[in-house]
Image (cartoon, rainbow, N blue to C red; front, side):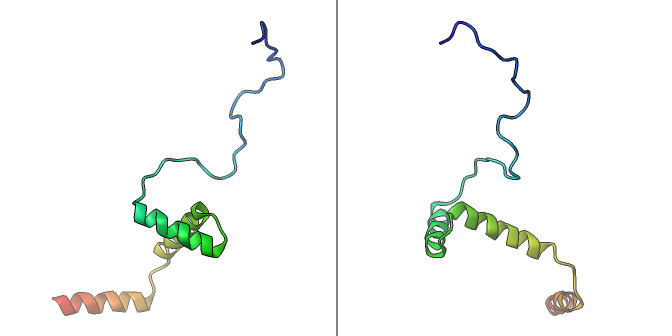
Length: 82
């Protein structure tokens, strides 16, 4: 260890630049993780990339606009159960 360090060219803030991704800790069931790893191996991708792609696709589907077809389907289901 040095007796003295030069921080005159040091910068404040994050050491690693923002890549548009965040490191998190998440707990997944082992069977889910195993399935993603198998699918990723077949696809030639990383399993984390595959999980990310799956989550993006689900979010995209859930934010789709309400169409007349979907509204009619929901109304039919609700009226049938009444």
